[in-house]
Image 1 (cartoon, helix red, strand yellow):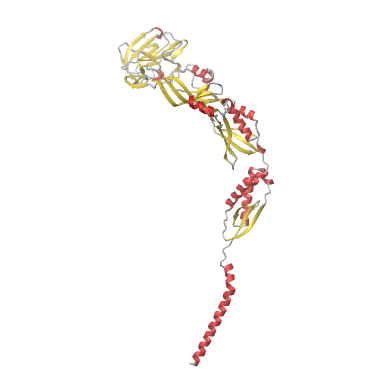
Image 2 (cartoon, rainbow, N blue to C red):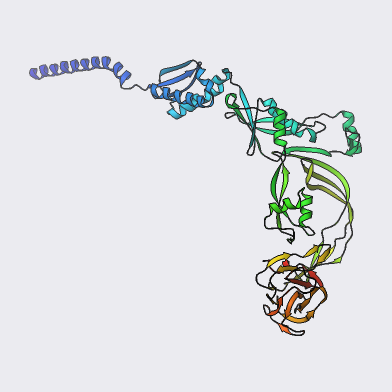
Length: 511
């Protein structure tokens, strides 16, 4: 028992020594481990410009690359950036939370900060390029740009009721737009009371007009973009010269659609052209060419680089005609319209918004209409039958004269120049109702068709059919010649519908 007691005492002493040593090791090691093994701080590098922290990256090299990239982008736009010397610091940071950027992100942040803050300290003169579609002109200041557009609207705004403004579209790129807005105006108490009682107002020229009438808007027919550009590489223009350049008219081609009653000479004259100028624009036409409603004719119109569009509100009374009523007519061919009843005019009061381009009316819409006297609409019967098909009555030849007035008289058909003896064929099935000499037509053949129409073939040299004979479409009926009142060998061809001649080119091809 005594031996066991001494062994137990030795074990206790050994355990006490071990625990004491372990405690000593912990006291020495814990501070070291907490500082090194449990460390959460992150090392990174920030950049400060003129005392303002702009951003941070993982390494000092990344910050330097980002700064150089931002400087290069600014220098490509503004040469004066080489003289810029802001206070820049790159600092190593040690913080628990690190908000770091990529090189591109940091470069963008530096560029934006320097553009918005540092560039303000550099004296860079900027010019302003005005772009109107493909046309450009450069002015020295924003004030010049506004003056140019004020000059453009001046004659359309005699009461100076509208103001031009230069509006920022993108500040970073120096891009602006132009707007024209009505100036704020104040009415006196007397004016308000008078207007409320009478419903009218007196204009500056003394005329009594409906309340609210007058100029309501000013705009332009092209998009206007103004861009800020460094002055060192530009050539500027004065306001007066810029105004002259963009308002100078030049000839611009456009398409005119032929209407009923139009002739080439009328179209030329109404568009300020000579007939020879009109023909030069349309190489497929000559003085004798026949044109029909719906044909497209190339013309030129005077056009400037920009046009001023104004809108007026107008109140007035006028006579008017109601839209016609159309009824189907299954006894006539398509294209044949017959007025059944004429209808009557009415009278109305309207409030209209009228649009002008450079002072010329280009549109009118009614915002309010009050009928004073009702209009009775015209009634028109519209033919629904399909017209017969006609064939060109000969092969070859050249078109030499069209339908319409010619040399002081009305030419009832069309002519093709062909050698004497050229075969002439029936344009459609029918029965021969004339075959022989017929006044100025010389030798002539008339064919009446089942639908009541008639075709005529004149100035023939010989006739191969007789009166009463039935013929088929395309059958040879005669040969061309130069008989009767004729100025040379040709075939004269007519089509009659409803007892009156019509333009054969509405039914057969010219060539």
